[in-house]
Structure formats: C-alpha cells, structure tokens
Image (tube, rainbow, N blue to C red; front, side):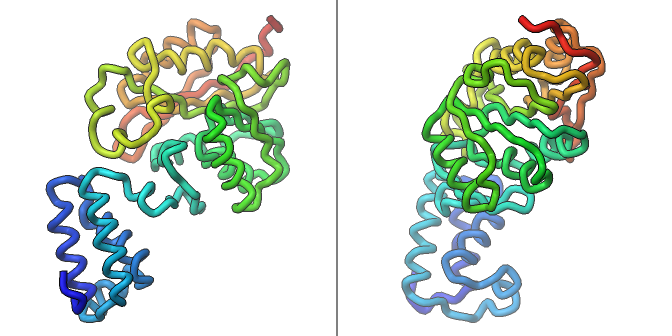
Amino acid sequence: MKSTATLGDLRQWAIATLTDVSPSPLADADRLLTTATGADAAALRAFPERIPAAAAQQQFQAWIGRRRRGEPVAYILGEWGFMDLELAIDRRALIPRPETEHLVEAARAVRGQRILDAGTGSGCIAIALARARPDAAIDAVDRSADAISLARANAERLGTPWIRFLIGDWYTPLGARRYDVIVANPPYIGADEPEIHQGDLRYEPREALIADADGLAALQALISGAPAHLTRGGWLWLEHGHRQGEAVRGLLQIHGFDAIETRRDLAGRERVTGEHAQRRPAAG
C-alpha cells in the first residue's frame, strides 16, 4: 500500500485480506492496527483520515501477512488478554480463551487456602486466582519447562511472585501435598479430531491440546489422582470439550465423586465440571 494510506484505508484493506482466512477479520484487523499505530479503537472510527507513520504502516502490513498465513494474533503480538490480565504469550503455551474464565470463576466461588493449578501453561489460571485470593498458597504444575518459564515470568510481571511453580506431569512433583481446590485445563482433543489441523490450533503446542483415549486420557489421570491430593471437603474443577461433559461426569462417579456439577459457557455448551469432595479418601 502507499505510504499515504489512512487508518481507514489500512483497516479496510486488512479486513478484506483476512476475510477468507480468519473467523474474526474485523477484530483481528483492529487489534493489530491499534497496536501498530498506537491509535485506540475509538480513533479508528472517529478519525479514519489520519495517516500513520510509515514505520507503523510497515509493521501493520507485516503482521497482516503473518495473520493471513494463519499465525494467531496472540503469537504475533506476544501478548493476550485474559480476564483483567495482559499476559505475555508465545508458542510455549496455549493461548488463553474465554472458556477458561468459567473455570477460574468456579474456583473463585469456593473457599480454600491451598490451590493447585495442574497444567498451568501461561500461568493464566494460577495468576487470576492469586490476584483474587492473595492470601492463598498456590502451586502451579506443568510438565513443560518452557511453559513454566513463561508462567513464572508472567507471575512476576503481574505481581504474584508467591505462586510456586513445579515441573512435572500432573501430581508427580507434589509428593503427599493436599489442596482445598484443584483446577485444570488439560489437553482434551482427540488425535483424530479435525480441529487440530484448523485455525490457531495449528500453531499451539500439541502436547497441551491432544490427549489419548479420544481426548479423555489427561482428564482421567487428573480425576483418578485427585483423591490423594484433596483435603476433606476439597473441590476439583476441570475444563473439558463441549461434548465431553457426560464422559467426565462418568469418570468422576467411577472414582467415588458424587456431588457433581457441570457449568456451561456463554454459548450454552457444557464446558466445566467439578465435584465437591464429601470425604477425605484414604491415603494410598
């Protein structure tokens, strides 16, 4: 485009460029344009005749090229919003999504001084809970050292350095520790599911997305191991695929949980299932 392109010209070009490759071309164009130019969303509409600096235009056009090739906006910018947080984000971890906010809300609604975030990724869940409950002792576990490095940096930058980060597979690094609340957004997509080859998921870490047993293997491991790490009256909350609610409730019942609740996302789909422990299981 010409260096004399206005905000309006750039916006319309970006929307047209992304229409056939992105599910949200307008939102993508606006987020990238505001970041590149420093103009806020209101200015894009109120002053479309403004001409951004040439360097900003070049940056914006390069970003749109990357987005057209499928790269997620979050990875292009290196940051992404989650609840009231602005997280650093890159290909070491999943991009936080609105569905996971329901998991945080479920955990915040119950009492508990000891909290475990199993499979922390970017740290978004642990950090959101730590900011809501600064008096709580929070552990965050992930088997990826790269993800833990990202999560720890996010925690320090966002003012929650007291979160303890541990590297390991689910409950492995915890020893005999017990928690009042366990939360997890584990991998729950089956290896044969077509969405793994579509959209932003193509760029995200596969080990954080894909699970065996039709996407249920990680959920089963979390459920079966939870009794040994829950205090009496503790809560377990899990995010899952919108078609997995019945299977997750069945797994909870098999492992002796009976006060089961499933919450729906804004689209009305089953998304988060949890259980209020009725008794402390015998230590294994």
